[in-house]
Image (cartoon, rainbow, N blue to C red; front, top):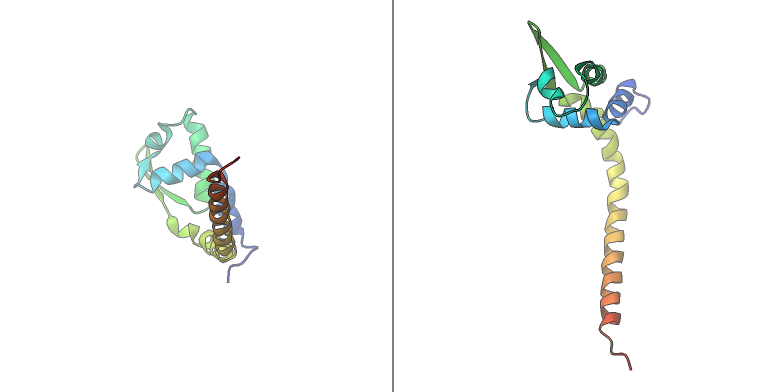
Length: 121
């Protein structure tokens, strides 16, 4: 059972609520990168990227290893487990409803095709 008041769950959802941080996580899914490599596609300063990285670190979504002056970041996907479990509970709720919606839309489309094919006098 997922703990709804879990501060870790709140930090994960908060961190992933920002599009820049989601993009950083997506880039790290392909493997570890340095902060400079992570910053390259964004039109923002390194200090701004570092703020995003600190939020992701605080949520446990990434880890950072320092080698000299170079900071290497890696994805820590295990932190997403609580969020995945929370979402999974609701997937059971929305999937059947989406199936019903799909059936309704298919019926509506078939009905419209029948009406479009009728001859008009």
